[in-house]
Image (spheres, rainbow, N blue to C red):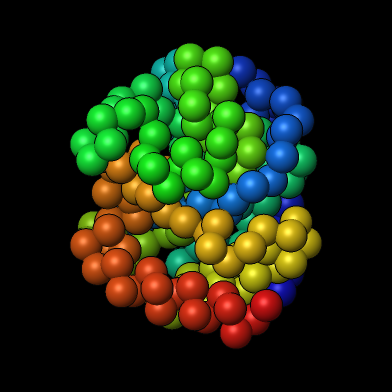
Length: 192
């Protein structure tokens, strides 16, 4: 697997340049717009986030054709799974799963965040229902396995954005059909 470097400029809103404290989990997302390409996601993080004062980013993005892009180095923070909104199930800012996986990084939302201890992968989708292309899924499984091996992240700590915050349907398809996320994790396991 080849990863193309397309690093964001260090800035307050999408690449703060802060070092990750730990690498406890790998969190998967969807870009939220059918047909959006990775270069457009990069432009959003690079240009729109600073212009609009919006915090958002991820270390990686997998395009519709299966190309993997690195937007932020693995040892730096990306803004992909922080929250200030309560999980509807636990009533706390982060889910029970997140508090178990992230410990102190999910216990004080005002002073800490799972962003400080996780890597994020954005996945491009072919439609607004959140369907992935076979190429996107194949590369995402390969990339997830590579990151898990490289950073000693156990498979049970590969999760979705919804698993961290509880209130966000991200990735939409895997939120609506969790069995598809389990199938994805089986693909990752095969490559470990």
